[in-house]
Image 1 (cartoon, rainbow, N blue to C red):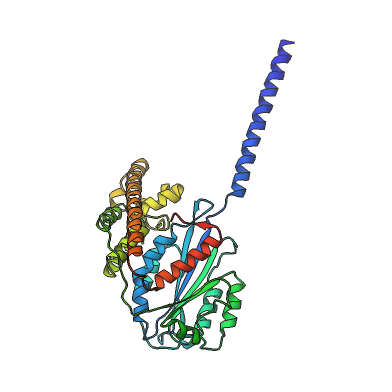
Image 2 (spheres, rainbow, N blue to C red):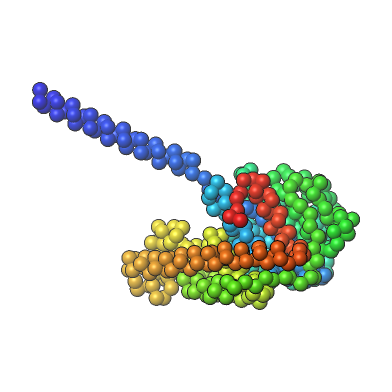
Length: 384
């Protein structure tokens, strides 16, 4: 009888353990099934690079990182979002007529230094500006996400008659609408002139907006007491990047070059890049050991010695991990400090903006205004 009781108790314990294991397994499977990739903000920027657009390119180059740092703060359901940028040029006579004078410089990517590199390489040259063709090309070529909760936006900027080439504005709007893409147009000139030249698509296209800017006007900067400290922290942040693989050194150099490019556009542009580098939007897991360790520890552990920087090749795996974790911690502190200083910086700027007269519209402010309106309509949120 005692033996029967023991066997019964043992059977019950085993059954209960199996039940608990089964429950744990189901919870794991269900949580995996409901886990969702980050919501995306996809922005395709189409820039007129015909002969009269030097001012437009200068504005775009100086305000790229302001756009990035602003949009990287967007969240969906309290979670960070993924920012993807694509870049096209059109209207340049150096582009074959067979492509409608439209050229893709980079497809959707979160490699922000690549976007900066391509943008800063742009120059102007006279040509024909086929705006509808440029829009339809970007609609068809790019890998637009199919999630209706994501944000999809094309921004096209230029200064000639919008309706050129064999394709029409109506066809461009229809093409974008089929993929839930909004179109914002930015005319370089007077507001009414742009409307006369067909740039205002706000009634014919879904979402988006129309802006007119003085692309040759000065870009007003507001210096703050926090700028110097943010730049100093950025310089320290750069020391935490350690390249790996065949492109590690090359891409570390590219990072430094893009720092220099931003700095060359003015103090505010460099500060905005520094802030963007302290955000989740700036990730370089394809070449930086710290970002790789953050995103994929298993791949990090499998790296061959030949793929590592020289100072790590003779280290054991545990030693490598310790070094990278130290860099990870250092980077986290620096990024946090930059973000905290930027909060104070932005408060200072908002006060100054209220004190100053209204500032002129630029390509950067037009893009941000349009993106924020679309994002908030889709329940994306911003800290401020």
